[in-house]
Image (cartoon, rainbow, N blue to C red):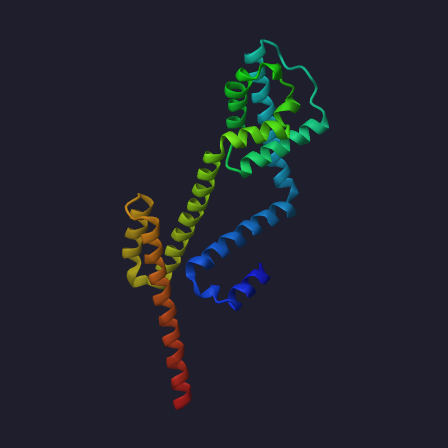
Amino acid sequence: MATVWTMARAFGIDKIPAACRYFQLASDEIDRALFEQKNPVVTRFKEDAERKKFITIFKWRYLQLTDLEYNSVINPMEARMISQVCVSLIGKGFSPEEYLQWLFDDFLPLNDKFVPPPIKFTCSGFTLNKFLYERKDQLKQKKDEALRSQLYVDLVNRARVCMRQNPDEKEKLVRAVEKFTSGGIMLEDMRKLVEGYEEAYKQKQANGQAEIINENTTC
């Protein structure tokens, strides 16, 4: 990210506030991923919980579909496959519940040759890719919503910084944030409002620095 920011400054991208925000969001996501890598216990706990939930739902739906209990022992390789599927689904904005619901309600009723399904089948690349293909429009929508949510949170946080920087305008900003969170102000309008306050504060800081320099020069 240090290299990315260096290149951004070299090509003048750092002068484009909206572009800088996207770079910052990307940097935050990288920091989050690095934290999870450096704290494997936290990551492993989350994966274990999702895997157990996946197995529980699968066995319940298997019983509903076949009137038979799934008694096969889940070996370590299958456990890893289940964890990988859960991570992949969550990373794309889907839950394991959505995936298994599609499998048992939509896919298997139309594909008897795969019934009864071993749990390994639910983790196969074929099955997962089939699900993602049939949900490609929804996948795009989820990506857009995730980005929009990130921008939303980012704007609210920046507005709070503006409140501290501009105490005289705090009440006006509080009302703006309240309207924004209730849908009364569109995201683009809120972005322009926040950027206006940020630019005004930068200008104020620059003017203050200029006055100090002039005073020192005069002395």
